[in-house]
Image (tube, rainbow over all chains, first blue to last red; front, top):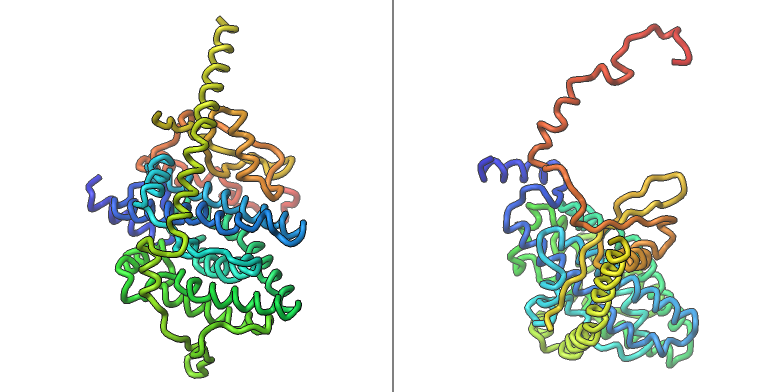
Length: 315
Length: 95
């Protein structure tokens, strides 16, 4: 089959919402885009464990501690689903992890912010996971089968993450004056970085159009961001707190909330490695990988030895 | 020392007694025992399964999608294999 025919069959399938599976022909650029996006997403899940792991030993109650452990474990699982999906495209786990550790691959900038108080666990669940869900739900219909299936699994589990986060804030918002202050402070710190999680504005997002044509992406960054802000602006009222944006205001004509300008210089500054925790996060990942090397080697050695024993028995 | 990657395994899960095992995803493990343990942690954290199969990915053989047309097309023109192909009187019961 000629390349032109293959490309036409591929695009027809995408147009008809027929999923692309690992062994199907696909354009090289589609494969590359997916590997980049899925591995970046996997890295985000894995690095995303770190800010929350910070509070496992200091969770205020046993219930909160159990919840936090379960949530962090989910994130490890999500990273693994996604690495597996990326591997079906011909990259290897070692390669992806190597790229994360060398700094070549990116992960979501949000995880480069520190978790200073217990209220941050609530704000992360409500705002950060909320933004992630907004992004991820449309990905359940992404054109690449293994990615879409991984996302279905992830979205199912993610819902508990957001609810437990909101509940943490709800309890604090009904607590003492100090607890209420802590709650508002966490919202103040996490709001703008969460709004930036949707990526640059549409006119500054060069790959978006192609990803939309390939149906990897279904909605633009700005569409999803607006939807997110509309939802949060209402939810925050239940907490009796405020979002740190003086220009946030319902626009009757647009039927959406208007919001203030986003400080993109901060966004790019953090992406380029200058956020408050970039170095710490990466160093923690690299150390965990290096400290685990002997376990990986020992497991393989054990498997090899056990195999030899079995063969000798049968000989 | 250069890291040697653990082999890749495909995971199949029976969600409850009486149903087939269904492909859930894949993971890396040094051997079958570890693959099952990891599959439990990765794919059944919320009672998604009562039984797990794992098989090393390299042992899976798959049909070629490029040959799908010739492989499955012959089934298309044998409509007499379906019960609706046969035109019978409405009075006929229990059939």
